[in-house]
Amino acid sequence: METIGHWVDGRPVDGTSGRTGPVFDPALGRQVAAVSLASAGEIDDVVKVAIDAGADWAEASLSKRASVMFRFRELIDSHRHQLAEAVSHQHGKVVSDALGEVARGLECVEFACGLPELLKGSFSPQVSTGVDVHTVLEPVGVVAGITPFNFPVMVPLWMLANALACGNAFVLKPSEKDPGPSLVLADLAHRAGLPDGVFNVVQGDSEAVNALLSHPGIDAVSFVGSTPVARHVFETGTRNGKRVQALGGAKNHMVVLPDADIDVAADAAVSAGYGSAGERCMAISVVVAVGDVADGLVEAIGARIADVVVGPGDDPASMMGPLITREHRDRVRAYVEGAPGEGARVVVDGTTLDRGEGFYLGCSLLDGVSPGMKVYDDEIFGPVLGVVRVGTFAEAVQLVNANPYGNGVAVFTRDGGAARQFQRSVKVGMVGVNVPIPVPVASHSFGGWKDSIFGDSPIYGPEGIHFYTRPKVVTSRWPEAPGRLDLGFPSGH
Ligand code: NAD
Image (cartoon, rainbow, N blue to C red; front, side, top):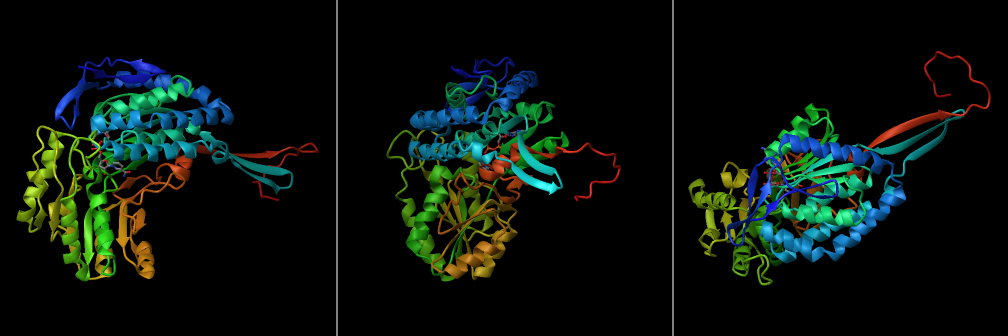
């Protein structure tokens, strides 16, 4: 059986720790490869390579860096299908969905291609007589990226496109559940002309993550994953003096007001709730039905579920693939099975789907869900939609704001004033108005609020440039006459 290894100093490298983990094809429900799990010693070797290579890359001209990023963009574009198939094979999502993931990652590379403009500093002439001040944006150094299983191409590109453009070296620690696509990305970056050692991939589990968090050669850490691990990464990384951005989990609400078009809202709820089998951090997991919209909406969502074709990701007829592992599938199933005992009503039961050995689960719809139930409080991360019924707009906003997560939220309405009030009232980082999955385009930045993020820096876009650079402010004077001794504090005149 194939063992998936690392990518270090411009080439594939076998692991030496002797530890491996299983990699499954979720559609077949069996192990198809093993992945090396790096030791602290292997992490140390990779970081040394990155430090050396990063020093030269930081000195590379902006035009050199931009030309590499443009070639990287072309190669990702021409390998879209290879990347999408690699994602589908180990993650399970349908290929059309994986192509969407690649497209959203590519956007981030396209944004980073504008690096000569993005890295322009600022200049203030004559701040004092004969004195000028300018700010330059320098790379941070070596950045570690730690990524989740659910977007094995897009999330690494959220990070590494800007990190490389800004002149940093990058060490990617992908999810051990679907490690394959990371090596395709590394190979494409290599073929784009990125110098060896600037972008490395090290496979591993928590041992590798903790070694990165404590390594003195790592200057900044970008993390995306679940909330408990995000909190751990943020606390450990910052304690060790690193700059850390850590994006966590979610419970995204879709509020449907009484005036909404029920068909539009039901289509959106089904697409955003069950797409990628609900394994998206921006998936809708709670529908908040306001007033008398509830009965019609529940019926319309239930009717559409019958049309969702569940099957292998590489079958063009499939709309939803399997879940990532057997354990995760069983965990999601247990939430649905436990829902009646918590007082919720199972409108559609997806646990009865029988699709052989793969890690499949059908779509489930629960009505009468409320805070305090596990199906409401926990991030289920599967194809389960819960409907919460509330009486008023104010109750809907209060529900959203009381939730500890604050990643994404959506409102469905035909009333512009209500939408505007909603957008201003909710304590959530990304808001959709009649858009169920409001993932910002790459020229903006992505980030939730509350327990969906630790640290103050959203990811990619302008905030990404900010995170991956350090400002250096230079105050200069070129005296026309000889200087004079003055022990006073500069007064600005
Ligand atoms: P995860 O937290 O289990 O794993 C993420 C990364 O952390 C992986 O690389 C993993 O190897 C590592 N890791 C896991 N346990 C660790 C530990 N105890 N110590 C150190 N490192 C550890 O997340 P996942 O299951 O791969 O991904 C799904 C989660 O990610 C969901 O909660 C989802 O909402 C979240 N997510 C968030 C965003 C966002 O932008 N906010 C985007 C995608 C996914």
